[in-house]
Amino acid sequence: MTESQAGAALLLTSAGAKIPMLQAARQAWLRLFPTGGIIAGDMQPLCVSRAFADSFWQMPATVNANKAELRRGCIERNIKVILPSRDGELLFWAESKPYFAEAGIQIIVSPATGTALCLDKLAFADFGQQHQLPIIPASLHIDNVIAEQFVVKERFGAGAKSIGLALSKAQAIQHAKQLQNPLYQPMQSGKEVSIDAWLDQDSSVKGLVLRQRDKVVAGESQISTTFTDAALTQQCSKILRQLKLTGPVVMQAIIDAKGKPHIIECNSRFGGASTLSILAGLDSLYWSFLQAMQPEATLTAYTAATQSIRQLRYSMDTYQYDPDF
Image (tube, rainbow, N blue to C red):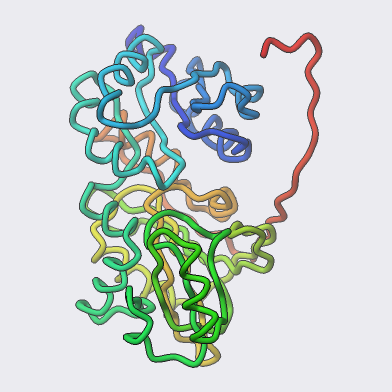
């Protein structure tokens, strides 16, 4: 291990209040670099995660105009790996990957083409139609959607708080007026699930965990339970391979009464509730960091948990005396 690697730092961007993600990243990073550090990065100075990291970086915006400043800041802090955590920054990091790699800084993000495809819900739906994949269709025009009830959402971004569900045609048209780039889809009923997976540099699925979203609050799973389904695992693996993604990803789907999946979207990043899948055997963060820092290293095997695991996410309080921020 070189001197720079001995104190190598991992940067979690858009860290916000993502404490479980930060802690999971720390555990994985310290397995590689026991004397390494975890840096929470965010544009907001009063960022909750800064109290749980080794240090905090109030970062400039992730836009091309700031690319040189961002790379310089990473070099100054001995940051070797960047873990983006917000959809809105993924394409910037994907397109900037070679620029940062020149300075020995690796970014845990899928290739730009796959990243852009997942960020655009219309393009993602069209991709499903072209490749005969069970992805829920979508259109910019409601008359192109054949359904009794409709879903209206933003074409770009997460948008869980602004989504309209189970709307009549008149209600859907009215709801769309509140959105910047409205997208229409047929309403699909069934069991809501998330699919956590990790793909290697060849977009081969190394491991995949299914989890039922038992209780969802503001688009995030508050209660989740893992389950097994061999046919669904095979179908999801096929879809992910065709998307040409790498590293940690999380896909959302509805399973109908006949057991058929209807894919809603795919996020090419580690998800907020994906820490459950680590416990279930999907060592996605460690694999990502190891592959980034030691490309020739042999990854540990994927050993799936033999029993279902339930995750309950909740808020808690912590206190600081003589706080430094």
